[in-house]
Image 1 (tube, one colour):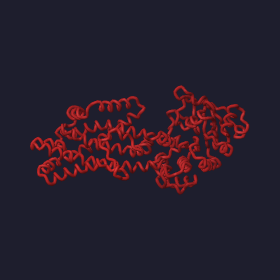
Image 2: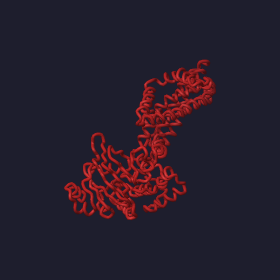
Image 3: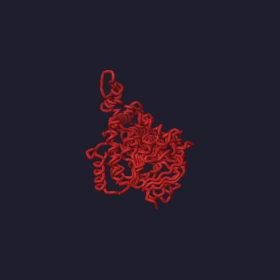
Length: 269
Length: 245
């Protein structure tokens, strides 16, 4: 069983198990054809090639921001999910405050607020040198904080998808609350939510383009720089689309493959 | 101190405003097998769950082997390790093999080594008659086999008491026998058992006493012969007529 795949589904690639002329994914062939076409232009076209070579220098930073924010988001999301599931009124309300606050503000606005206002305030208050937190890392924290609120709901749904009888069985064997959670509930919950986490990762990869507003030189920022100096907008942005779409299509295929694998395993239950 | 293994005194349990258990007092001796019967909603499962403190009684006292539950001085996890519980829905851990289901609590709670825990687990799986299923996942096992793994999982903790909450109610009729056989064997070996069930045959074969409950109260208690063959109370008679048909 996958949990809440509809929460954030950035791209959904489904290849039918049996291909006939009716079920054949022509749309996917179209996307692949588009990518091949741009790829061809990059290989043969001088202007496309120049744009590609310039923009690709941002790919490492795009991946760094995406992974970094995902790690931050997972940690915050797990903590917030525990808060939401807690019977402690205070913990529950703090978690709810965080989740609803984040969901009520546009991501772009929140990202800038975090990077320019909140993170500097916090590190000043903590007495840490600002140089340890450049804009890239502030952007990671900002993006991670936003995604933590989304992931909290994924984790919560995952934990709640495990029947309470599992906890009762564990507790009746003498396991503590924490042991039951760590050894019985979470391993099952994580397995169920992996496809949803994969989708959120893809969404995060796309949203990492927002950090270009902070002049972090990831893919989108590199594209902005290149088009600004060369005025080759068509080539620049088609190449940028090529980068993102290639990554999201590949990741989406991986998510679908995994979802099918655990899907067939749970059907056997 | 008496030799009782379980003592319930004046236990009450409310769910919101509904009184599921109403002033239940019961003393169970070491080695005794007690079968609890009653119509659904009579509070019999809730009483059982109060013994393992999966439900906290609203009022009253639960004492297991001289240890009073629900007071700060009592480590409930330590008590639960001594009280095995078998559920209607088995509640095996689906992400673990049968063997791992039986070893995990031994390792985490009893702090046994991997080797020791696995040796105990294999011994208990053999005891319930399925040593060859050690490496199977729960979904590969029949309901009867799953329930027997669940019994082995509890037995591996070397409990002083075993509680059974309608252990055969979720099973296909042809699988009930294999689970009851294991329970009967346990009873003959002298395990202290409290069993909520509708299996009259099991009660007659294994029980020292039968408790009949209705509407949260104990209606009557007696030997299987007294309760099942010569019930005094009208409600018991009515229930038995329905179960026997």
